[in-house]
Image (cartoon, rainbow, N blue to C red; front, side, top):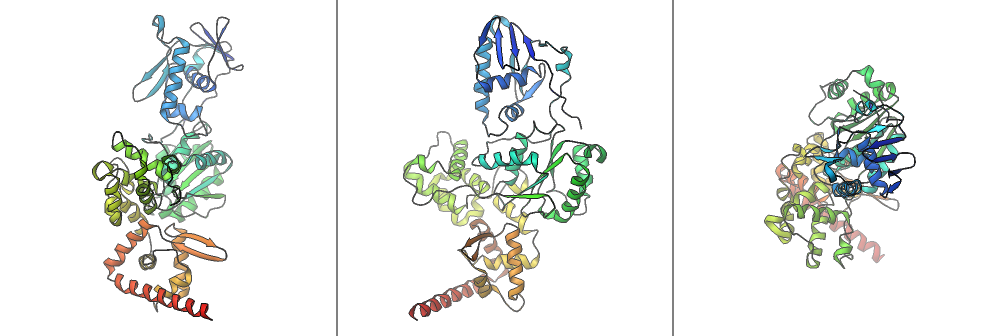
Length: 485
């Protein structure tokens, strides 16, 4: 694992007729100062200090905008401004070239006043194995900015949340923005394809192509993705790594907290959905991140797509019934060209079939909402599956008393049921709402429909729907008696 060498100590970089004074942050052409914005100067410095080498677009964005989510178009605008200011291409002199599918390179000879030119050629880019990001990240700017600020100070951060909420997406974007901070790189280790029989430390070292001694001396960030099914093994791995490697930080994703010393947990909520009273204008609705994502992905599928006032209620309904989950919204928006907005809305009663096909380039658990839920469901105990299925008869938030009143039985006594409900909440299959002193649990609509299908397959659906209806009737009757008294 190679570390990033320190940047050159040269105070003035010279190329063509220009002198770039780094400390004063100005560029002179003879005695004339070139006027450039701060971001353009940052980009130029990154490229000039790596003269002759290709710098990826992702790397440029991570260095120049370390705490912001920025689209590639911003980078292209600044590159174009730089070229104009330098007269790039005039009189046959080229400074910045675009290397298709790779990035940008500064191609003019560069000299530094206080170091020999060879120093520029020995610089190395930060090491990483992060995948290329195919689409922008929507609605997570504040949360990602918080992660970027906290991670250099925190040894272990775990992002938790339900299936499809975007844990991996957020972790990878934060990792991109931290590339410049960790001298020995940012490394993704995916645990989704391995089981408990695989030694985790061996898997990590193989992914990084290094040995344990080298790793313990590194200033690096490890992104451990999909830890939920290996919690015990992950705890052992993290205790060993964090104890032996004082400059190592870890960003983990898991559907439940790992419960390791030093762990800070960041729960990832669904995207923001407009309230039913906030449908007054397109601009107002578009201020909500769930709608922003839906429109962005719809435009990618249907050229010329735009949100109209007559669409606001339907789009809000789509985002609400898909729980504000990014994966579900993306999959629904992908059907726009075939079904249009009204067609997508009409299919929501059969949402798991509607959300059955996503990007073929995505990992299997991200290709459909059902696959994402299969991943969670397949890792539950038999008792947890049984409780999840039976709780699917609750279409609204419910208390523990209600759960006990509807689904407990001789084989599932109240004490056992309470523990199982708490376990399902810990695994992000139930969300928890506190109203005063009362705790309520709620199942996301997509999860409820999935669990309801499993309950139907078990043959118990009609029985528990009747039990739920009887419980509701008894509760209403008791409330009526109390009111009368």
